[in-house]
Length: 149
Image (cartoon, rainbow, N blue to C red; front, side):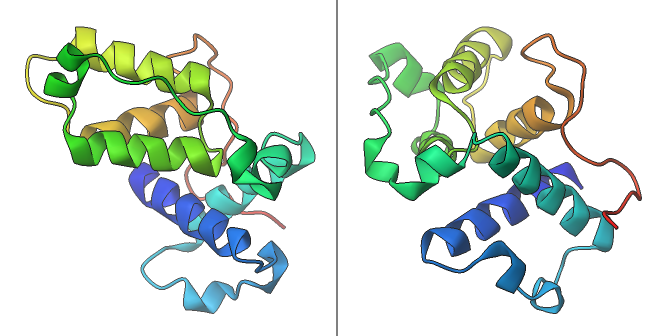
């Protein structure tokens, strides 16, 4: 479920980047997602917009500072597709530079295999849902079968 919510958040933010308002996106067109996933994605977006975490970045993505260049060792550990996905999340405003750095560090110290996109999705979902990499256990999303009224 968590990966579906991340995919849905990315889809919604990309739609908003091309000028579609969140309230104009028809829920019935979001096929393949259940009500809980849709509610979780919408609640995350609403919370981020209310706190201005996304509005400043999404108004002009060109104003976001470029991330640092990966060290050759990091490039050998992180698949190009996984890093591209991470960059996409960064430029969409889903993660900030600090969280991106934590994910890169986590990739370097946590596993013996090469990091793939599925690994990044799982870690980002963990950061957003449980904030497990930041030490904060407070969730910013709905869980289970909760919905927004």
